[in-house]
Image (tube, rainbow, N blue to C red; front, top):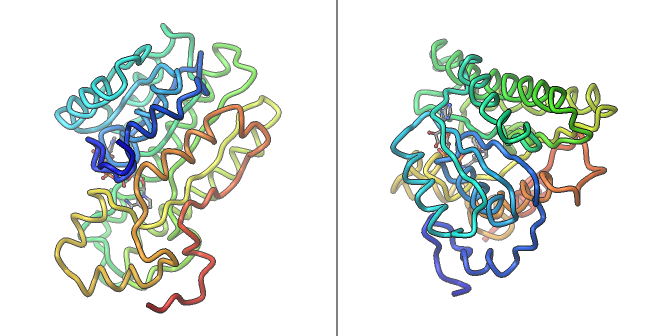
Length: 284
Ligand code: NAD
């Protein structure tokens, strides 16, 4: 029922999603990384509902199994959904992942979404180098490898068009007062890389856009905030709407960028933040 929480933890309902389904991705093959997480799973559900075949990838096997089970329950009409364990920071994993889609006819949509924000990420003084490297390996190299192998698949299968969406963050656009330097720098790199990929591959018909989500109600952030009300309040005060975003609200934007409806949208920092980055200050 509209207004109920869905199985995925979002406040927007699956019933609502179902009623809006129009086959916007009919005939398309999609890969989603970080598919077991908040944004990834909501996106897989929408992609499946809109007629895409979906390959769900994540580093966590059990979480991936759970996510695929939820998808199949919520979208019994799904044409095809498969899962693969992959670490996006390892090129061999990404190559093997993308090669799976040869049997489906190649990649049409690649959502490079996997990312981490490590608990030990801090400011310039306190961020351990190994945390910087780990963050960049996953958040930046993962997007590069995903983009590279999506391009190779699209070329191999002579695709006239393709859509690659890379998850960045609003912190790539505005500084974060609570430091997470490695994460912020990594997401800035995603924006810059996506822009250049968009320009270089535009005449092949391959579009690249970066998604910039605001702080969300997903485990990535909420686990980190926990019950710390001051930490929570410090963020909420910046939201014009006074609330965190929901993963489904990001997924709806990803669906649009993946579909042909966004055919002339390329190289954009696609900001889905309830107006947060346009606000000077929003007092309660
Ligand atoms: P999440 O933690 O719910 O999901 C992330 C998923 O990525 C998890 O399932 C995790 O297992 C997977 N993952 C982690 N490392 C991986 C690796 N090396 N290879 C493959 N998979 C890996 O988080 P989310 O909120 O859904 O985040 C998705 C993306 O959105 C991330 O890139 C994140 O940085 C970005 N983002 C999140 C927020 C937020 O507030 N949640 C805000 C802005 C941007």
